[in-house]
Image (cartoon, rainbow, N blue to C red):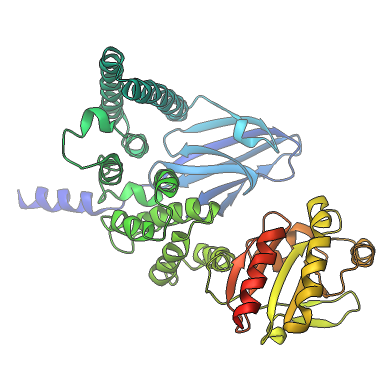
Length: 451
């Protein structure tokens, strides 16, 4: 008995053997083919496939347990799939559109694709039913309310049944389902929460097992939280949303990769909307994970630096650029003046149309301590200079001639032009995107108050 007990313990103490999958990719238009993993912000290169020169790529990929990985020629052109459950996988596609590639002879990947379709169908049915329910409620149509309530009960039952079925079949895919199973407030609340917003916040992740380690390597931990934050961003405009989200992230094991995925998913949604709560979430991520996950956190740090410039009262990010004459001009050198940073370009029609208004207010206030620093998103110096002359833009100008890849634009989160940032004499942001009468009114307030 003692001998058998020792053997039994030794057997279960051994690490699980890595599972091997032979990957064959048949794709046109490719130079290379790789396997990537998701790091919470972008992708890490894990393994390159061997190319035969005829558009076929092969490798044997080993992984400790089934998990999501990405196959494609670059991080921006990949096919998500589950590796580690099949002995062999054949992928057929075309580079540039790898996300649409086909996977042959893989039951788990077929099931995953079917699950995604089921999520879409469930969401569509839920949205349609809720619109009908709300319309009936507004009209006081009790007959239709009863019908739509019954439909919501059916949808919720189908969602529960799907989760139970997948839990019995596949542990990994079941975790995906938990991130996509939200039940209706109308049928499920039963007086537990005072309103739908509280219900949403407290029940969206009710089926998640926070202690399960599979969430640590699950991109849907990110996706689920991105969807969650995206919905809340429209309902809660202020930065108090950050506190709500922090409470939602608390159940994850502290400092875990799953917690990082959850927080980075929330940040991604908020950053895209330039939501005020994004900065607080980013700061929490940086404080908690900078040493543990330096590469993706560095990307978040760079992204949030542009978002900070949307916060009124924040320090305006400093930069130095070249004028058309090749002189260095820095934002910091303009301290003591009210500065309008004007992002524009010679090819931007709305910018050129706005220029006469900017010329007018500049001439009105330039002798009172007002300066404009034009930041061009041009790529051609000659066109930039011609536009300055043609529009009589007599203020300061800089450009790195990188177009939309302008480092200055990145610093300020500029994704469209014209766009302006008004900076006070101490270098703090006073306002953004003032044009026309709004700009004129703001400058009138500033200079009449003596600020």
